View 1 (cartoon, rainbow, N blue to C red):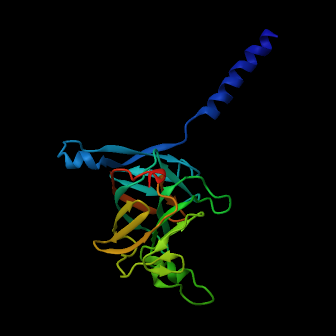
View 2: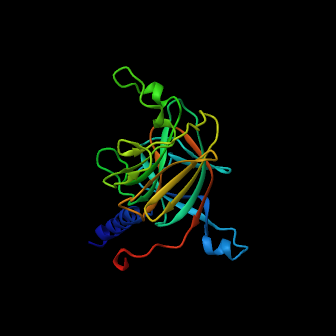
View 3: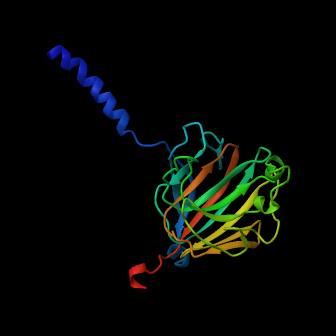
Length: 243
């Protein structure tokens, strides 16, 4: 019996340890509180921690000042905490024709059974050739697809500022092609999202039915690079029960 226990204990211990391991995580970007900025504080912000939800160790690589997403498998990495009201700055570039990615805001970070992606409001990031490589009945999809569309997914409903069906399309074409850096400045406050694309506010939506949750970086089949990701956390909204 003692010999059997001596054999079983290390085996059980290693098995329990394996199941107890934390998900793969990495640091990228900075977060600062609005009140620290208004107080003219010397606080330079804190590093943002990201947790892999359903991709792999080889999906994400922090290389110098950039985060590289290699696109496979399809899935997301989420922020370590949830956010309600905030400003988001991020720069991104695709390296492959027709590259597909994006950032989900106000997400529960639970992957869907079919598409492996969570709910939330998606701030889409498509490479210009996407419309050329994804013909529908021999015709190109609307160019609005590749100009920073905003839309609710996974049951999250929104009211688009510039409707293209249930999605909101940019009112001006501002996207740069692969190999060039694009800049998003996103305002997320009380169910309203406004998007500045390469220096001009061109899109928005409101009345999101979910307005607090994780940020999720999307891996969707193509390599994409991110840099200079910054979050400024704003004061919370009034609780629904008090309205």
